[in-house]
Length: 118
Length: 171
Image (tube, one colour):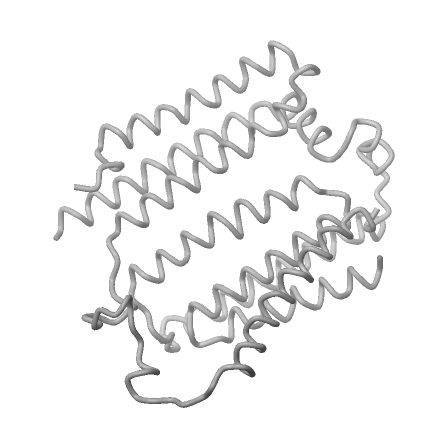
């Protein structure tokens, strides 16, 4: 049973190996002449104006919160979808009620401008 | 098989210790990702592929993104030991001890992993896999809890939006 996941393991080993080999090889091959300007942080050649760790808007939080909640909703559709033939109309009504309740939340977010960025 | 379990269990425990002991919260978050992935591996060993996929998609995907945004919203560089942590410590120890006792009771009740319930390994394979078996139980026997989940999600959604609106008004 575990052997079915051997391709996943091989993929992970290759992905990790690629990253490690790239970093180690480039470190070994490149000339190493550090300089103050060379080793400073840069972004597309433009000089830095703030630290990378600044405060971000609370809007990022609300977007990821809404994403999380609808992600959970979507996760509940998988077991229903593969059992559609067994559950029939009963299951369909059940899932429609589930989605309608969450749709109320979606319209609430919409009406409260939670999806707007301003 | 047993070796894979012990390897994943070891990674899960070590990375969980890393989560609570690292000073930089971003490093703690990465440790949590490692812990969640190894837990997903253990779920796969238990023939619970659907739960394993959910663990990766919802926990390592969505919840981790949420955690990172919270860290960035708060602008924490290094976590200091805060005084209120020490007040909460005895409560945390009591709650942790109760949870440990509960887990031990469950392990003993389950006859040390040899489940004798209706949904054993043969029955799940007969039904056509973990996700199918879960769906058939969830959408028939546990109909009401399933519908209550949607109300719980709705409450979380409204709560988050209300809090955000209050926060933006204060600016």
